[in-house]
Length: 366
Ligand SMILES: Cc1cc2nc3c(=O)[nH]c(=O)nc-3n(C[C@H](O)[C@H](O)[C@H](O)COP(=O)(O)O)c2cc1C
Image 1 (cartoon, protein in one colour):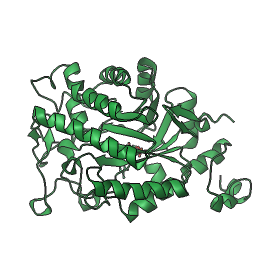
Image 2 (cartoon, helix red, strand yellow; image 1 turned 90 degrees about the vertical axis):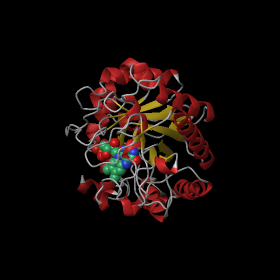
Image 3 (cartoon, rainbow, N blue to C red; image 1 turned 180 degrees about the vertical axis):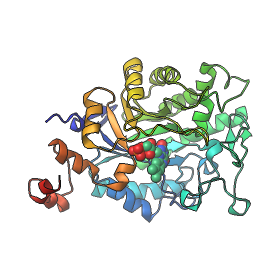
Image 4 (cartoon, rainbow, N blue to C red; image 1 turned 30 degrees about the vertical axis):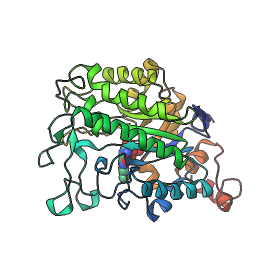
């Protein structure tokens, strides 16, 4: 059986055993940005999911660049030490390589954890002044962000560099910048949220400027053997918002800036924006970016079934697939996919007796 999904792939100096990636997922379980015992369990578990790569959640480059008080950060020595503890553990016990997503939440920051209701932090919960390209809130009743000043743009760019340097010291195999889902850099890219009149607003070239300056500065700081990528948005799903044509232009520019891969996602810019609910809804957008910008592409969004994932790779729509909710539902999803597709996957020796060669029960389950 064809198992394109289990073909190895090389990104910069990084060899991945297969095309399956655990998508970054906020856990809202950090202590002033420091990864906790929950992260030891969660990431330790996903290190044995069968995925070639696990991407650690959106991690704030500044304390006030986080989404919630529970989000991880890489803005202090304590954060760096806590992340090192988790990643050292994951490497010791797991089969996957590790990446980290570094992010600034912009106007979607200063929020409650989802299980506390999501929305903006109330006055008694230590809210902070959010920043955005323009003083436009994410939605009704959200904090009104302050328009970020030019010198603060430079500071945030430098914070991305410093977080990337910390990520290199932690020992991550790949680093990716969050340019999607309505967070600060996406807010600059989209004409819906960016109404600036200076060099960072207006034309597409100007709206890409902050993203490109960040990409270039981080690239200069990250050694060439570490894969550097970004998650971008291929559509705002909004009238007047980012289109696939804009995303292709951005992808070409980021390739020229030295990025090794892109993850194609979409949506999340405003409270009313809705993503399509169709399986693999970003796959055709990813295919266009891959074909036109000629850069390795990962795709995410309602990829749940091993055959569906395999087809996306086999048809050349993307080079890798990322799964989020399906991995929470079944943290050994990669093992399931290997069994369904008749492929080999690395399992820790302690669990090998549940593999298809040693356990007839597996075949009975499929
Ligand atoms: C619990 C949870 C946390 C998430 N946190 C992040 C995040 O930190 N960064 C990010 O880019 N996307 C995040 N997402 C979005 C996912 O990475 C993914 O893009 C989205 O869920 C669609 O993929 P899926 O259909 O496989 O779940 C999160 C999703 C979930 C369910």
